[in-house]
Image 1 (cartoon, rainbow, N blue to C red):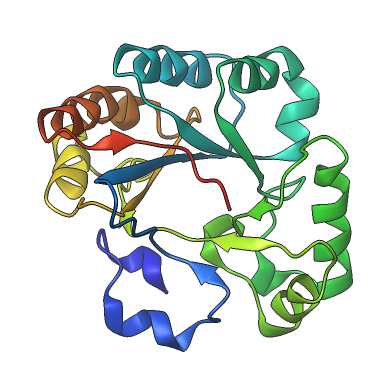
Image 2: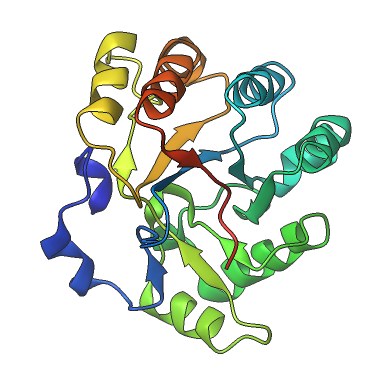
Amino acid sequence: MANFWAKTPNWIKPFFSKKFVWNINNNKELSVYFTFDDGPHPQATPFVLEQLDKYDAKATFFCVGNNVVKYPYVYQQVLDRGHSVGNHTYNHLNGWKTDTEKYLQNIAQAQEYINSNLFRPPYGKINREQLKSMNNATPPWHICMWDVLSFDFDRKLSPEKCLENVIKNIQPGSIILFHDSTKAWDRMSYALPLALEFCKSKDWKMKKIEL
C-alpha cells in the first residue's frame, strides 16, 4: 500500500482504480495541494489554519464525521477561511476490515455533516466492492489519495525527518498528506510551517482541491 513510502511510486498507481486522484497537474501554474486528515481538532486545526493564513495558502481537510459533531465551531472555521473539505468516514473506519454495507453507511452518516464530493479512505484502505459502489454513486465521488506522505502520525519519527519527507519529495502537482490530530501534533506543528515556507520560496501556489 502507498503509505509505506513518503513518495508514492508511480509504478504502484496503476494497481489501483483509475478513479483515484494521486496528484493534480496544472500546466498553467505551479501548484501544490496540502491536505489534512482526521480533524477537526480543537488544538491542531486552529494552528493549521493560522499557518495557512500566514502563507496565503488554501488546503483541503478530510474530516471525520464524529469530530465534526464534537467540534462544529472548528469545522466552521475551516469553511469560513475558504478551505475545502472532504469525507473521511464518520468513525475513521478501515475499509479492509469493515463490511461494505457498514462502510458505505458510515460514509453516508458523515455526509450528513460534511457537504463534499471528495473522499479519502482512512489508512488509504478501501476494497474493490466498496470502491465500485462509490464509483456508481450519484453524484460521483472523487477518491483523493496522496503523492507525498509526511508520516507525521508516526511517533517514532523525528519532526525533522517528517519535514524531510515532505521537502525531498514535493513537486508541482503534489498532494501532500498531514494530520490535524493529537497523534501527529509534535511532528506536524514543526514540519508544516517550514514546508509552507519552502513552497513559498519556490513561488508555488498552495491550493485547495476542487474536483
